[in-house]
Image 1 (tube, one colour):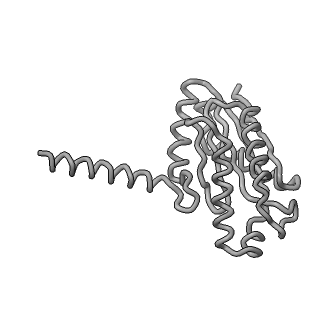
Image 2 (cartoon, rainbow, N blue to C red):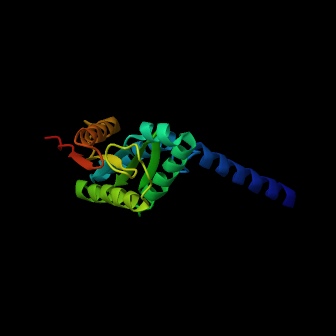
Length: 193
């Protein structure tokens, strides 16, 4: 009987570890894209039901290809890890989720957070990264690693879907890059009439 309980406990522990690994980006140790997609859908439905704002911050490293070319891919990996740690320290609530979106892109889901609150988090990310002073001698913006951030906020409705929030954050990120990088741009989706 005792052996059976030990085996059951070991199996449960192994399954929890597998689930954790399935939802984690192996390089940066933040949530992966799969976990992000699941979490965004869940938070979208909850925000729609409760009628509260949902914000998304999509950001990436400025001139990261140049960084990899200049310093090498191993240094690029270390840089991504440091950016992930630094960005993770900028979010305080357990309901907020930082995920690696792909490549050098990261995303943060901020439940029950309006545009001003999301902009504050984005600026905190920029400030904390600047404090690290990670050298980037091949950047056209700064001698340090910087990020551009696109922020989108909405109160979800049945007429919208989570992809509209991602698209708005992506458009804001593109605008931040076109305005010179190393900045955050906020787009608030208008409420449906």
